[in-house]
Image 1 (cartoon, rainbow, N blue to C red):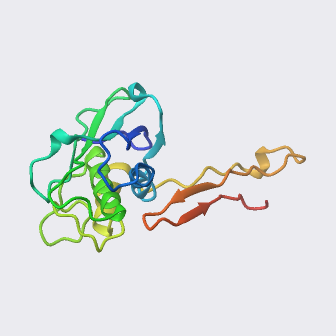
Image 2: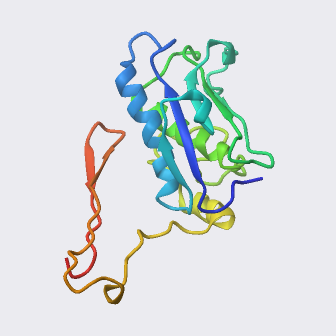
Image 3: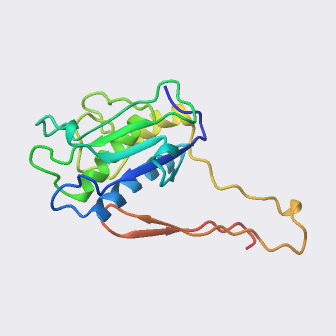
Length: 200
């Protein structure tokens, strides 16, 4: 099952409680927060951070009880079943997997995979290049063409920002602008995006 196309999903993150030794909670939070944006960039689904756990559709947090001594089992996320605006899915991340976390990039890729499950995406077949593979491929940077095809079958492609018709605006109105959005990249860099309508 999946959410209705165009849904706005509230994302709550606790990256500090039970954070693994040697991992900066702020870095972990940035990787977890960036993961949904990889899906929003290719599919008609939106995310926003919330500070109240009760308002969240997806709750991401470290959970020592998810640990099973299996290096390949790094996190667990519920999949949506007949989701409603009140549905809450748990994204439980193992703070102590066998061998520990290798890098913030690994956490980012695991979280992209887990958010895929929260969107109703299932594990990909063996031999396919996919972020939804049961084994995380650290050579990937996010969803592949295979993943884009699957998620767009459920949600459609990402929608461009709305553009108001010039005819609908008073002749004296200033062109509408949109505030820039800063994205934290897995390598620690930042990407600043801003949409400027034609004629601005």
